[in-house]
Image 1 (spheres, helix red, strand yellow):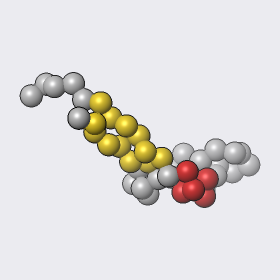
Image 2: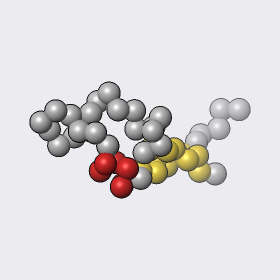
Image 3: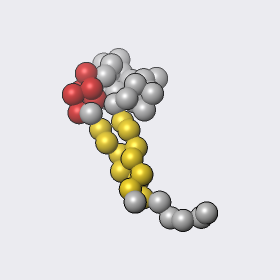
Image 4: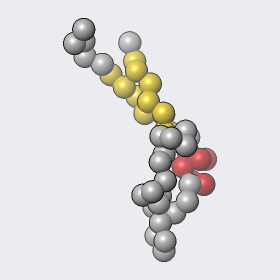
Length: 46
């Protein structure tokens, strides 16, 4: 029931680099949801 879990973040690098950037900066727009868009997925490891 309260077993410890280990998760791994899987990042689609091509989608990450193509994500919209914040105005005048070299970082992803904070309003862009990386998880919702499938850029970052979390996998539970056994």
